[in-house]
Image (spheres, helix red, strand yellow):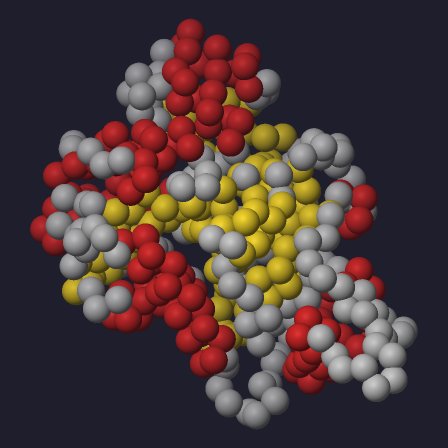
Length: 384
């Protein structure tokens, strides 16, 4: 499913539309930075579908493990992450302009979320990576007094720093928040008013449970969705009960057959998300295959303007697991939180098997078997 206007050819003497100029400009931009890109198609693309899908295989061959120089020779920031089939760490390049666009975009999203909440202080607990390295810069642009917690510290020190600093806004990952609430006697003592998440999928039952533990409302927790390759993609709107794509981002949905994945077909309302970014420069951001499966991808009208959106993130397909060790799956978490008031969940793929670890002080053997039966999980390990 394509949700945008196509490039069209124009007759002699006819002016180009804004959309056509954008596409031509984007294609020229990508080709100027990545000369190999023009070799991927034999004729000039006339429609979006004429551009090749930017798959993991293409990126491994041409981008992830290759050096890159910007056209104007300005320095580039290099972020490394796991994920290539050859086990070599991926290299992702950002120019200063890329970083500033990323920071400005997140600043706008964060501002809309906290603007009426009396937020004055913020803390980031992000581990490592691009989101972690830019967190304090975003807080600075929001004029917030801020601190960050080093990922190298033991979890008890994370808890202590949160108690001491008492941030109004906490920016973190679901997996880190899981560890924090499990280690803290009373997470509400942190005094947090708002929580912004990035990283793994945050399901509705999980967010509801976290809101209860922090004595805030589910609407005080915002999930954001992005990738190291393309930056911030979308954020969850409680008002519309959907993820809304950020400005400058174009979404398509494709089936597994489009990229020759040897997996079961997706549900009728599910598609693999494919993205084009008009803002990202040091990445070939035309039809980038995220390998993330979304449900109900469609545009909706907000204040007279059409916004691209989807209902929920479901899972990741392909060989790479986002953020390494954890995949939060909606269906699994909805079942787990139906039975357990407090639980940490990890989902791992080992070979072709899905393995689930549930950590909860309330987990009894009968409950474990009920969860396993309803979720159709073969391998489930529990810890109290």
